[in-house]
Length: 153
Image (cartoon, rainbow, N blue to C red):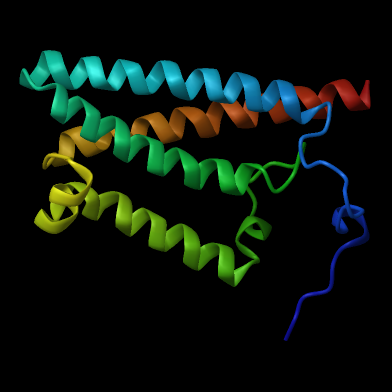
C-alpha cells in the first residue's frame, strides 16, 4: 500500500531547485564541517597508527556514514529526523542499511580493500568514523532547531 503525500511535504514543482535559499547555508556549513572532520580523521589515523592509509580508510568510512545522515536530514529543511516518521520509507531504510553494511565491508573484505585501496580498520577506528557521522547529525539538528525558532519568532 502506498502512503499518500502529506500536503505539508508535497512534491516540489517541476524545475524547482532542491537547494532553496534556506538550505544553502546548511549545505555549506555541513560540507565544511564534514571536510574538516574527514581531514582530521586522516591525520588521526596517521598519528595513531603511523599510516596515512588507515586515516584515509577511517575518513572514507566516515564519509559513507555521513552520507546516510545527510540523506535522512535532507528530507526536510526544518523538521527533526529524531522522530519515528523518519523511517516511514521502506526503500530509504533499505538503502541506508545497505550503505551502512557497505561502509563496514569496504575496510573489512579483502576484495573491497583491493578495489578501493582501503586498509582494514578495527572497532575503535570504526568508532571514530561513527562519531563523525553522529557529530554531523547533532550539528544538522542544531541548525534545524535554530531554523524552527527563527521561523516562529
